[in-house]
Length: 554
Image: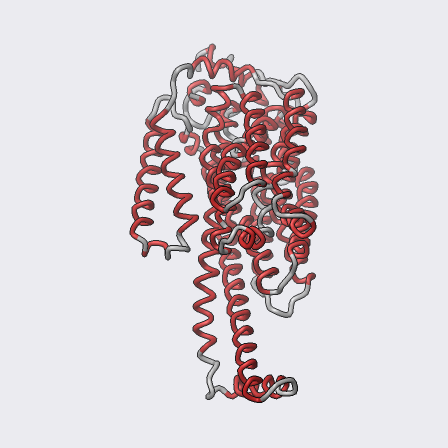
């Protein structure tokens, strides 16, 4: 390697001018603000649907539109940070997010709310990868496990406490206030970012290299492909998916554009999203696994409030309270992992986490109409514990072999796939819920016959009980109505159980993916540094793309 390359910024790690913990507080406030809005609206969906004259399926557009518009900006984070300056870009995103939150709260129709959520998701899309890359760069390698534990608390816990907060606000005030509360928090985040965040020197050099080079083709293909994907996920269930001709055309556009985007970005000299880092085995496998985490995390956060409110009749606050204990499990796991991350092979922690996650999803597959709050709280605590065990080691292992100047680009792709997984997961479970309920109804209706002795006995018992308050004919009719309502509830419960079994199986498959990870070398380099190796040698990142660090960034 030429001497000029060895003297790159990666050889002399940059350090912020203030304590990295002040940097962490500043960026985490913005991250929590954004992540909270991925789930705070979940328990308010029935209220939004009623207030805006929409169905429950249409109300889920509030969730999926946010996640997919998030996804369009996520992979652009690295390029936008270089082009406009990371601090300026971060503050602009926070300001636009706050303004979009005000528009969400004032939305008069569902269409206006969805459009405001699209703007909010686009503004918030860069906040997670920016925060993650800033924290990874601000902390020395031996402290990055602790930094990712703090970051993980925000990313994992915020979506979990979101339903509780949203439920309390919805029950006591209005669903509109779940968006208005972002205004003062966003203002504080802007002040902290202005005071403590600074741009590292390598961004200026990268901007000079990329001056005037804008990958318009790559951006256009990605935006068009992800926009088509958003429309498919939003409207698919309502139009019976591929039975609609226009949806088949949108699917073709999505596949062609995203496929062309991948080919173009791999061949372009200055891509807007550097997909070449997927050649790194750890990053590619970690990206696939975080997609599965997104599916499970967002699917369960969307499913459980629907089950508790629509099937069991819980109010919004109680359904949110049933989910909140997951946050306690996640916090306990984060504290534990921050102490174990340098002592135990992170691959083992990831495998154990997915095993526990699969077990918690399997526990939810035993839901029925006779459960109590403890039957929901227990599995939620276990699921939170699993998420905490997975998140930190998966993040550090996935990016352990990447050069430091690729952290922003990698964090954008990584968070993109988690959000895409969440959006796909919500759409899939919504479809499975609608289709599965119909299928189970058809099976159960076969037993509501005059030739089924159990049904006849149950109907007669109900009719006799109701006959004490009305005539025999009306009592018999009311008994049929009561039994049919019970049939609908049982069909819904069976469908929820099927969905949770599918999620448990997905988690179990991820356990086998751990075998494809290589042992993180940064952890080993940190140990060498502790034993006397010089800091530049210990902290120099391995460039797994086969190109010098400067070229890899371009």
